[in-house]
Image (cartoon, rainbow, N blue to C red):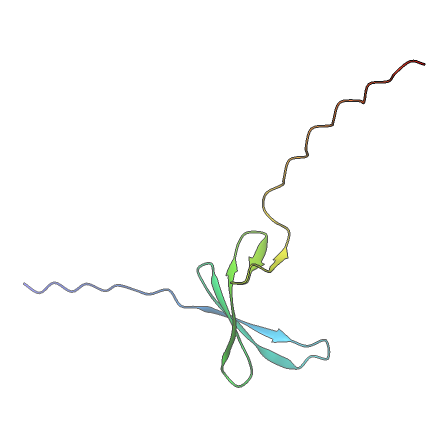
Length: 84
């Protein structure tokens, strides 16, 4: 009896980066929630992490709207008035 097992690996999706003039400036390869920006010479320029509403660089720089909101601080009580 011969048993064969095939484990498939997910392929990275590639997206072209275009300038406003329509020229290709590089590509972004996305696999899972990790992405790599690759320039026209084929060298990786920047790694980024993709979240539902934003992308984040390793240095912490974020592009997009965060998927959470920071609750507002409660209003401070009014200051007491002194009758004169």
